[in-house]
Amino acid sequence: MLDIKIFTFNELQEKCSVAWDETGECVIIDPGFADDAEKEMLYGFIAEKGLKPVKILLTHGHFDHTLGLRKCKADFGVPVFMHPEDREILKGNEFFRKTYGMVIPDTDVETEDIADGDMIRFGNTELEVIATPGHTQGCVCFLDGKDGILFSGDTLFAGSIGRTDHPGGDYDKLMESINGRLMCLDGNIDVIPGHGPQTTIAGERMRNPFLQPFNFPMEELDEDSSDADDGLSAN
Image (cartoon, one colour):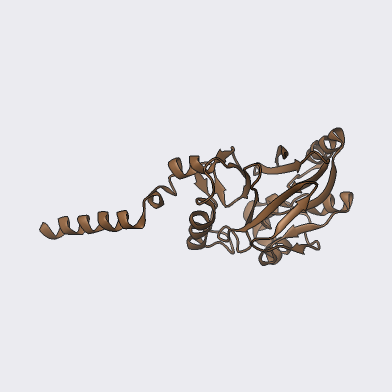
């Protein structure tokens, strides 16, 4: 069974997760710690629990999710897994330095490529890679199908969706990813976003204002559209 500890890091309140099972092996997802105090929160927890980090997983390459990446990789000596479409974003954070006025450390580290459908294995656990481009071209989510947990990064939030106005963002792709890849998952799946509170797939189907028009079958939408057209013609 998967256990999870969620940390809130840096000025943008990014969520970094440590996930582990009964073997003690763990993965670190989106190490966005910005200073020594935040680093010690993460490292201290790992040491206290006696966990063994074996992989670092990135949902995408934005700076707020990778501020502690170089340090984390060096200290634990583990590989970093990321979709190759985000390699340039990971290396080039000049846009975000200028936009947010933050000092952004070097995050140009070697990464292992992952693709849609890959299985990330550690201990007795498997996380499925679900490609969800839109927030960035290389955005992915990680799904623990056995325990019903989705790490959604900045693709899906509680009551919201990832922004698409930064370089590499694409609103149409994001909506295709969410509706085509995530909303079809079991409603009971717990969602751990990259910012903000946790939610569920069912909760977002029912209450997320960005997704409400897509809750209806296409046939029903077509009928509603036809009725509306008839009414306008009659006037």
